[in-house]
Image: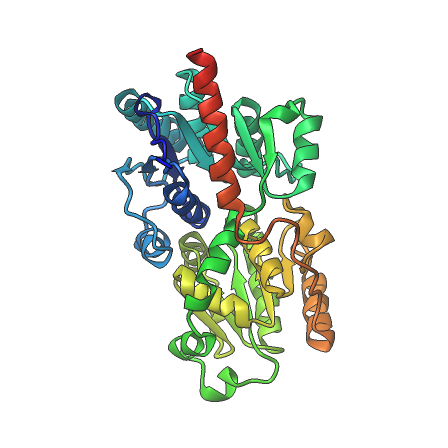
Amino acid sequence: MTLRPWPVDLGPVVCVVGARPNFMKMAPILRAFAAHAPAIPTLLVHTGQHYDRDMSDRLFEDLCLPRPDINLDVGSASHAVQTAEVMRRFEPVLDEHRPACVLVVGDVNSTLACTLVAVKKGIPAVHVEAGLRSYDRGMPEEINRVLTDQVADRLYTTERSAGGNLAREGIPGERVAFVGNVMIDSLLFHRERSQAPAAVLEAAGFPPEIVASPSGYGVVTLHRPSNVDQRETLEPLLTVLRQVSEKLPLVFALHPRTRANIERFGLADLVATPRMAMLPPQGYLEMLGLMAGATVMLTDSGGLQEETTALGIPCLTVRENTERPITIEQGTNTLVGRDGAAILRGVDEILAGGGKRGRVPEYWDGRAAERIAADLCDWLLARRAGANP
């Protein structure tokens, strides 16, 4: 049997990444597109929204992600300026390559910006990780999610509740497909390559007695502006983290904005303890190893809520809400907000009894990207057949 190739007149799928979480989601999609029959041609565009090597280039290496075909080199700016600049630089890419569709992932400014450019030019837009809602319009990501889903042509969801969110917003069910979680595809694909946590802890400067501590260790990440951009919120959080570190050692993977604000507000003394290691942003494989061996994760990251659920690691989320409710309902996640007493209580409960273990949600099985490839191919070929009867 001769395999029919991808129609020449259909063009490639333009795949957009802009920030760290996008890379983990895009890597399995590109692998699935290449392995699909017929192979789905792609053009990988990096907007340059994150440009720090520790948060960008290194992730391409860790994830075996091909180098971008195009880098827009947008860099950091205000939300308005960054979104506008991505749009301005992305439009000529579509004019030149005339793609079959534009595929975006997640909820960063690049996600919305590239979707808007595509739909205004009559090019189908596809959103992976659609329908997630925190119902907190104070989060820029929530605005990006809602607007992207309203105008995108094909929506892929990670959990069934996301489909309900989209239905309540008036989005027809025929635009939506439940495929599972591509973030977990990456986690399962790379799990065996993850770095041993002891090596990371030793490299962080922990003495052997802490590395071998029977209580284990905790991992911390904080980056959301609502947590780190004002002294009156960051200082109490660092104070309670220091208290937590007296119960078990902490590895704090510092986002650049968090590190800068610790210095700007003069709070370095709060984290100057041998029980807390302050690390630069970690590579994917180092972070995966740290998470897999952790006693608890303390974070405000959406993706880490999912990854800890997949790994069975208790997670305390330092936010008042989450757009990933399945991690609470079925997984290992607990919302503690910025309440110091709740954080300490959560840590104590985990140390006493192991915390929530939960279960792995439906379709978090490492094959979400395969389902996307199969559905997208059928959908694009059906659109082409309808346009060319």
